[in-house]
Image (cartoon, rainbow, N blue to C red; front, side, top):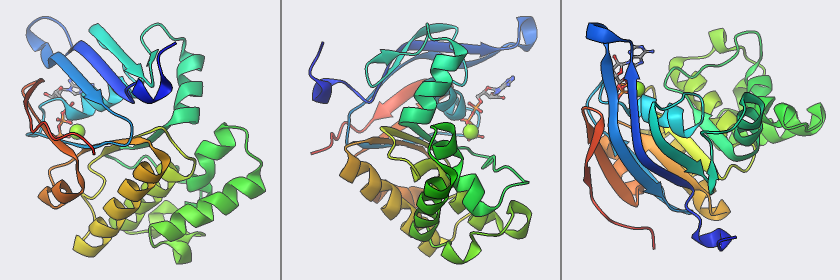
Length: 236
Ligand SMILES: Nc1ncnc2c1ncn2[C@@H]1O[C@H](COP(=O)(O)OP(=O)(O)OP(=O)(O)O)[C@@H](O)[C@H]1O
Ligand SMILES: [Mg+2]
């Protein structure tokens, strides 16, 4: 068994992914290698359609690659059953989706408590933790609101609270500040990065937002399904 501290939070090798078949086929990933260390904050940038969400979805074991391998905390996800993947996600991952994916029939507090409920935490404790997470992203006063009663930026912050409500080993965030103004975006990145660093977890954040760069240890650039630049800075 390798030393736990030496195991990468994420390790991907040779990932390829095509959508569709024949002439309509789109090569979304063309052989991606990526390592993210524990405690590291990595920013992934690139033009629309270059494959960023596809890569995050494969890392989160929500989507299968056509070829290549991907491991989270040393565990290869390719051979896992659906149930094992769901268990791994519930235990280790926080995911902020590009489209937020809040459940419309649940309040902010209930939405933010979902990962804990899935992990078997009692409702009262889960909702208390959800309240704390909502407070961290500046939404304590909106905890009983439904998503339709919240602005886009507020919904985005509920999605972020849901991702940090349990202590994840790995946080995957797809455009987490796209609907936020400068102050809210700054607050969210400060919460995410301090949470990740204090836990020794890792954060992989997809963004078009250059304001996020100062929070990152490393910036990776993707184009047309491949990583074309990696500024090489490594977390201290
Ligand atoms: N379910 C799908 N079926 C077919 N093609 C898809 C599907 N999902 C993504 N694609 C295609 O794969 C490519 C990569 O998409 P992806 O969503 O990963 O891009 P992205 O970098 O996240 O873009 P954006 O910055 O706009 O979110 C695009 O050309 C897209 O049209
Ligand atoms: Mg995307």
